[in-house]
Amino acid sequence: QVQLVESGGGLVQPGGSLRLSCAASGNIFSISAMGWYRQAPGKQRDLVATITRGGSTNYADSVKGRFTISRDNAKNTVYLQMNNLKPEDTAVYLCNVLAYSSVIGWREYWGQGTQVTVSS
Image (cartoon, rainbow, N blue to C red; front, side, top):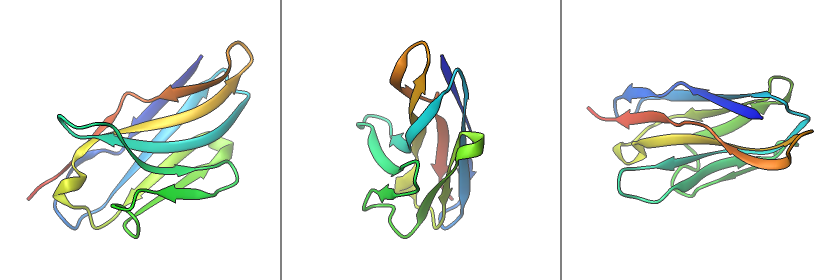
């Protein structure tokens, strides 16, 4: 089994910054894509950013130029640097990982979510 532990959320004023982290642990043989999604109350879960094992990235249009996704393959960890935050960025941010374990094979895993609130 694979566990994801997220950290770094919180309350920040508009224009501020936060850095989210998500560390994967457990019976991991390999990790392919890693990413972040977000879900605001009453809304659907939306893609924020993804990154391949080789470092290729993809961003939602709403965060391009403000957010940066990165990963440390040695630590099985993905990061999301969020700058110039706006009130509309307020949501629960969830980590998503495609990992291979010897017991289950390839499977998608989700973190428990971390709250990001942007408010003055």
